[in-house]
Image 1 (tube, rainbow, N blue to C red):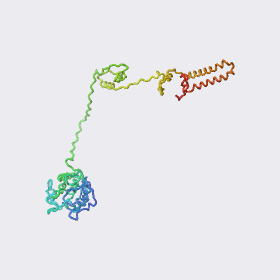
Image 2: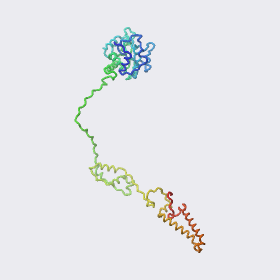
Image 3: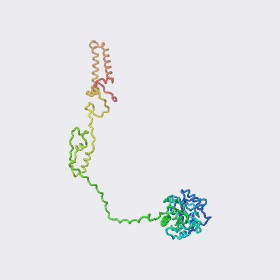
Image 4: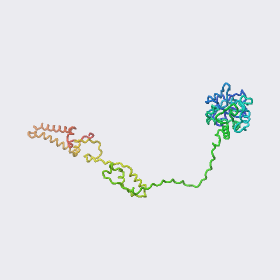
Length: 414
């Protein structure tokens, strides 16, 4: 028998045990103390709400209904493991029960279960349980199919252990509603002996820490090994060497092909010829790595080299050619003509122009005997020579002249 906890002590006990708590408005003064006694308290009673949804279940337990006004418990435990505090005094949750069960709970001397109840609410021998127990309503349909999440079961365990620790009780002070009244079946979905075992295990641990069950205890650490003599780590094992190539394969010489086929597509493995032309060290069984490297080089394909062009055989100057004209009969004639320097071309042009001028002037020199009479003819000859010079300088006429009579094009023009 103990005095009920005040609202502050109840809240502190739950938080000290690591319970997630939500305080609803007016929970400290929302109770049924004006209808009956509250205390002395002797234990904790677990119920299921026969409802779903946290908000609807909390509203139902806080307000009650027409035949049973609220509050219907002190805390509502939802599926997520949160305890919603709605009352800190007398609540309509336990009703009447068997006095023999109350005596065994007060003495905490029963075994796995308290004795089966034979009384219920309204019977002649029933005892008021609302004044003797804290009530915890758990959100569940109570049909045996609605699951109980692990977080919700852990919250039941922590909240019950918090109240038992605050009053100095053992786990036998926590019972289910079905263990108190013969007319009740809750909670349905887990067994109260298993829950009392979890609560008892938690009470042996520090408040707020995980329960020290045999499964969660760590095995003792083995003592450290004494330092032994310093030893070097073993060296990694080397892979076995590759077998040496047979000598008959190393000295095998492929058949010679004609020279015209050595570098053509008929040669097959062209890389073999380039390797054979190099100076190779003598084959030795003592150097298998070198032999394997030479064999690998022989298997690599080798790019074929293109022979450089020889433009001097075609009459063109050696060096890079930036522009090449198409080969026509006229360009072929120009390519076959011998090259002439610029001074030689200018001299040839002057001699040709002078010869043309003398040919025009020759009749005047024969017929006339005096210089004054032949002066107009000399002027005409000079004019004809100048005209011929200008006509020869025309680009169209230049293309008709042989190469040795052309002038060099000005720099910057083709």
